[in-house]
Image 1 (cartoon, one colour):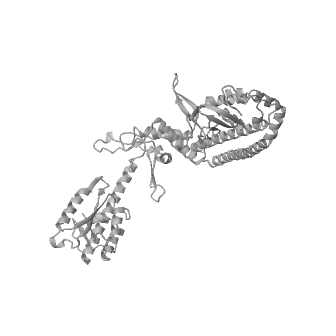
Image 2: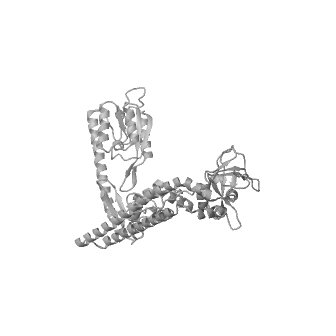
Image 3: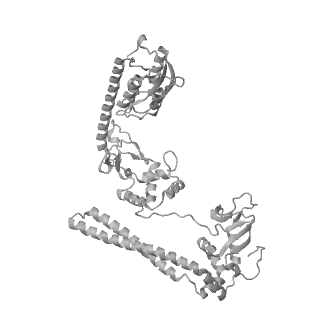
Length: 536
């Protein structure tokens, strides 16, 4: 349909609105943005229309309030101030570019009645701002809505049929490539997605690590170390990892519109494509449910604790700046090796700002050689430690009470499980699936019970070792430097927490080592040892 000269609009300032429409059943564009633009600009030149702005978007007009650009355009047309008002009408290719739903169609006609829209101009439809013109426009909007509804129903019907055949109709999933069916070679095509070469190993590793009890943080770090990426070349984020682990799709169940009244599901495990292929699941349903139990806390996961180095927070420079433990790689003949040292990060400290841990350990060993303890010191030590030991025993008693409650709770859960089994057996509902689930739950409870009893046993043994005898104390004092030299890093950390108050470092040397009370009073001999390091 074309315009006669007398039908061209008298209003001269228009917004040009362009919207791409897509035929969902064929996936082809009905009218591209560029062709709309060319036709509209040609009409604007004919009618000497001024296009003040081009509004362009690629959104469906089937549902209202779904197009932010369109909503912003209407809002600007409602401006009353003539100085701020840029346009008085809308130029578009056809009425169905503006609306395909009743709400926005009615809003446009109401704005014409209120004088907020002075005129409309279309390439394929001559509109006049009169009562018959608005009536015909309402009919065009109604036709556009009927077409949209019919198209939506046809697409939904076709998608439901394809879903029953196992087609993945709702976008791709991480780890998979969606295959477009080739109707010319149906025996060579599959309805199921195929594993992605890069992402499928990544999603497999994510589920494997989670089943081992790893946290999202440790999974992310492992993927980064192993260079397991997504198709964009990035390591999946922790939030994405959590989302993948909750998706039923990875064991073969596709849930559509989850949590709504239209929720439905497709079980790909029961389907076989025409080419004979089956759905390539990442995990089994049992493994997936175990991941959900780990997330809920029903199954304990591994907790990665931050490694603590000996003497952390105890070293300072002469100027009073703290030193922090840090490992650095060192080249060896048999390959690189991580070397522990202590570094000062404050640039105000004079260099060198790093000292090897072995130098610090040797300085403490030399101090421990000077310990001289007698029965008098033993008595003083016991008096000083009595409060600490009582507090330690109180904490142990509290923890033991908690473990005892867990043991009783687990024992009751085992009894309830057996009662449930007997009830199901009497009712004839204890089938193979129920038996498998019962055995798994029973095994989990027994393992938990065994762990709790081991913890209770360790606490009972620790209670007897709180107070050392004088013989043990004397032997420990004479051989303290040997114990320190042979201890590993964790043992050195525990010893240092008891003995060492602080250390002062001057460059590459330990200037002084200060022990805690009462150990600082039990040193014998010279305070200045060979090598020139002062000890206190």
